[in-house]
Length: 103
Image (cartoon, rainbow, N blue to C red):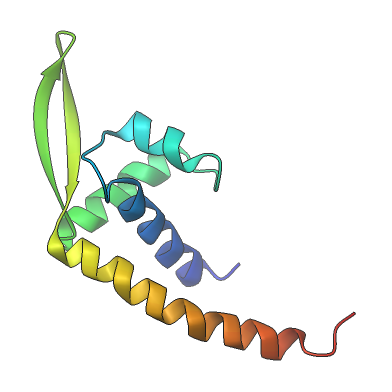
């Protein structure tokens, strides 16, 4: 798969994982795992990129005596999910064109 396309898909997957509630790294990976395999190093690179793009915010809280980073989606992150949903129709049209006549 094209690296830029995959990067965009992974970004949206991470945003979708925290869309309804704040979450932390391990839980995000666990929530995404049934749909796509993602390493911790990939996840934390994506989280940092999304934070720098103002699509999520980070807060550190203590949990069981340890510090844990929680990620919260911003309005820009929610907008990116909506943009993706609109773009997906175009991607499906391209797929249908490319596979037209395949058996």
